[in-house]
Length: 326
Image (cartoon, rainbow, N blue to C red; front, side):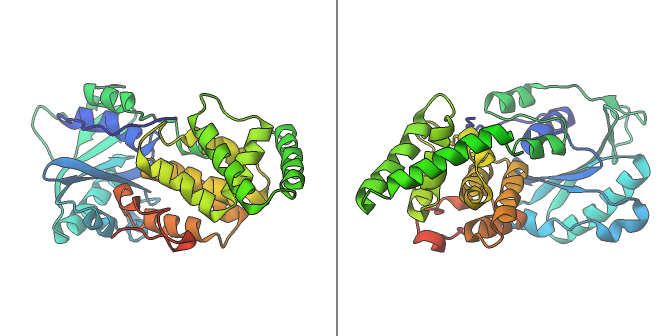
């Protein structure tokens, strides 16, 4: 899976609304989405679940801190849901954003394949809404750059579901065989083999077989090798982030080896803008190893809204002492 950076021009609500699912990685429902802008350019996108009703708006998360951290001076508020709740949510969010100096430029609602303006009463925005097309010129540009949208959030979770018992058992056997073989190697020879495994599979056109999965999974257990993989992902050169490789490896490993691979998968997703998949990967890592520090740190950074570009130093410090740039 490869992604590239692209400057996308948005011309109006249709371009924005058809692009949001690609930015999130799935088609949102019953959600608040805030698109942050800086000098009119798209800066970041955040999504949270809506409360059950307009009587429970105190449960609506405040995203102003995350938008401020991304240096946003403007925003577009999009609510996916029924009209009464959408209006109440938009008003509450608008008040918070305005107070934080992040001007809400538009309020939109999406429901049942149509979009509605919550601020415009002119004929261009009729009360019955307008049909939301499946694609636009802007969304096609995002798709070409590597963006895609699953049907819903559960489809993203499913990407990290464990492989079949048979495949995982085959990998477990290869892990045991590799450990027995590695016991005869000195440190330098072992490090060389680990680096070769990372280099080979990051450059390969296919996904590894059980032997290859075992080699990559064991290599990532060494913090220096893991950080080497992070640096290669960060470089943006060579073959790309190989998110597909890290997910594939994490899905086939037993719990004691899952955390490093899942964390690298989450880092690759986060670094290239797929925050939802990154969150799922970090949760998988911490489920397997609750105290895995890099996963804890990256999850906290993601939840705080730290932009992906601030991760450029990850993997460059002393083992677990790598920092997220402020």
